[in-house]
Length: 305
Image (cartoon, rainbow, N blue to C red; front, side):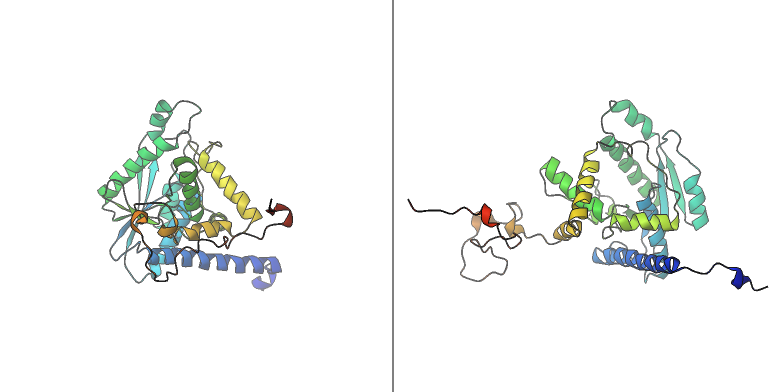
């Protein structure tokens, strides 16, 4: 009996899906690889502690880093770390089973930060600030105990843009979420390999790879968070004006200090005319190049008296 003859024929839709998934895989690996190179995130002999929450982003980050580790021109270790915060109903078996199946070294750190947050934060108030501080402190400690040289977090392009807007709207600061930084303790290098990756691609990749997603009942259900509201806003912008999020993200790497207002970054008080042309100089009396022509009804005509 011809077994192949009994197999269902591949439909055009199946072929299209397969092609799209191959393109998605190439794009994700290319973007992660480019971010690692651009910011020198991973170096020879590094031990990378991949923080695994059980969400789509950290699963995707681990998945891609495992694939890249196998063909990278440098040698580096990966150890996955999950902080079990003792949330009620947390499925403790899921991550160990997944990681054992992938053959990834891992460490589960059990710390009841959930009870601390629920005790100290009044009902109805957001828990993110305290939860983040407790989680960060525990992960830094674990990194030292494990001898990790890099701590990898799963923040993506959209997270970075949202953080910029949050700091502008609510913190009055032009501050984002860098792809690489030294921790506030000065003892750890934190990297974000997904910095160039758009969130919709991670959603699709997680569906394709069928990651066993674990929802966060502590903060994921807080619908009124400022981050949730800003994220909804940029998603609406992206729907109406495709490419806007990418433009904002790109702008973060093309800062012109002389056209901002920070006196610590540019010596506004001491600048003088030099008579030397400057390509970055302000064309003071020109219209903003990005502005569309005004409609006739909006133009104000000045008449002599």
